[in-house]
Length: 217
Image (tube, rainbow, N blue to C red; front, side):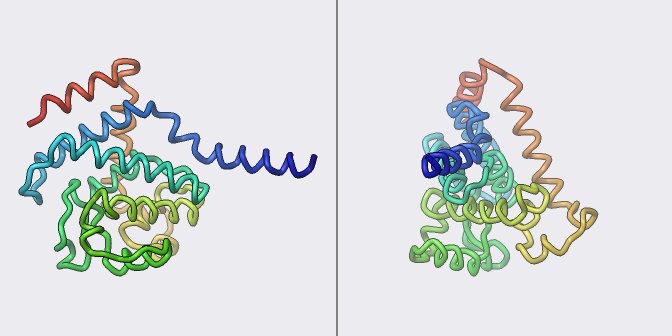
């Protein structure tokens, strides 16, 4: 009886950690993230290649998939919209190899030493080209890092965001006033905006953002 109860409690905990992912309708989430990526990528100052609508859907699906995957594995609650807000703030969804004078690469502008550290932690081979590929390791590594931050800071969104930009050590050492820097405002602004947008159309949202995506060149 005690064993069964323990198993039940573990299942409740694991399922509970993923509640936020199910607060969004999957298709609505995919349509909105796809639209946002395409819209921003089209007007990005740092990109010179066209991103197809098929490709943006692959990006969106990867963001949602890895958010769910690492939420379960790390027993946290990673919001795909927060991942999207950080990627937009970092690179406008443009994957390049010359961010920070070559020290950071990919759609998440991740430092190469951090990418190598993550590869070692999850026991896969580091490959520069896989990190440059958003649906290779680019998005996956960013979500994994954020999952660690969710764990470290017990879901404190401010510190999670700052840690992505400045590292765990600096985020841990800052007080509330120091945390509220320009980067944090940019990410929070986008994150809050996304949440408002995705919740503002109720039952029509699936068709609305699919339509908006279809209208983009």
